[in-house]
Amino acid sequence: MTLADVLPAEAIVEPKGRYLADLMGRGVQGTADAVVLPSSAEEVAAAMRWCYENDVPLTARGGGTGLAGGAIPVQGGIVIGFERLNRIRQFDPLLWRIQVEAGVTTGDVHRLARENGLRFPPDPGAAEVSQIGGNIACNAGGPHAFKYGVTGHWVTGLEAVIPPGEIVTFGGPIRKDVAGYDLRSLLVGSEGTLGLVTAAWLRLVPAPELELPVIGLYRDAEAGISAIERVLASGVVPAAIEYLDGATLSYSGDAYPFGLPPEAAFMVITEADGAAAEARRVAAELRDALADDAVAVHAPTEPSEVSELWRWRGGAAFAILAQRGGAFSEDIAVPLDRLRDVARETLEIGARHDVPALSFGHAGDGNIHSTFLFAPEDLDEEQRADDACHELFQLALRLGGTVTGEHGIGWLKRGQLEHQLGPTGYDLHLRVKQAFDPKNLLNPGKKR
Image (cartoon, rainbow, N blue to C red; front, side, top):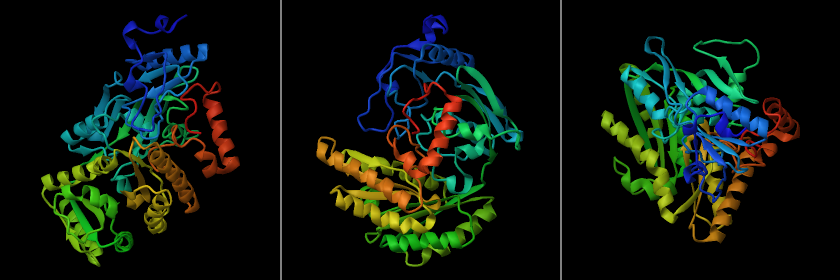
């Protein structure tokens, strides 16, 4: 029996370039015998049953915006794309909940919620392309995860297909559920190695009445990180706490919408949100916390200015990439009291490997994007940048952190998980995989 015997003809397409890669950008190109674009959970189950009966690897792919190679079919076989699983199954705005299929984009959920006075807080980036299923598979974060949490925090139920091809449901449109082990949370962040998410119930919240960013600019990282510590110690809860170091500002600062003072070499972005009176109160406290040692404090209030700020922040990675044409940007996370070490030692690692280095990211979570630049045509420099990343992983673990805060292990960080978990923890991790996927056919080689 062939794959065409169990699926509609229109669900099977020839392997194409975009289904064989993601945004990792490290020269890893996958191979596949076919790409399956199912239109229902039943078709996903049929494809998995066929793969399990014929010992064929199966790799899930959402929007392809991953940065760890998690969606690349490194061992061939079948790729499942979820773009046709894009229906809103149920939307209950008065109950603050929605059920969507895995291929619905983050942007579509954001828009539908906003049009009904609600908010879906996770904002991991690439919203018009990234899909909810992929965000769940990676437990994606984003700038506002400091206050609102990562994607998994907003998932109350999952429909998934697990080997050898069974449709299961964990949780649902409910707020509490302590029956059995938390298998829903086990699938969240599993990067398609345990099962394939086909639909999810998501929590929503009322949209904030007002959003007020407060930005502090400083002469150096020491002053900027001290400001972050004052914000954390102030007792207020901002929606976001971001930082950009001096090198990042030197590359992206010209486009900063409110004018960058020449002496500014470190930026802290915070944001107050909520009911108007509460947002204004928190913004005032943020201004007080950021003001000490600042060369400038900016507090835009117009909605258009707020949108412009976050567009600029989202574009910083592109400004960085434009400098030399290549950039390896990792997503380590460390305890908040070690931010100083990350900011300083990222530069030291770059100097040791003779590559430009910088850091920026989600300071409130300790989730920092330490980045090393290279020219793509200079293979030696590219290798030095890659070596710098591996030293960075060692730094994260030495500081009591993790090798990935939001991008996942994927293919890029294979071998790092055992260093982080230790032999006993890693063995337990592998036994969970074995329980779900005894033939090791789901996204083989990943999350290891």
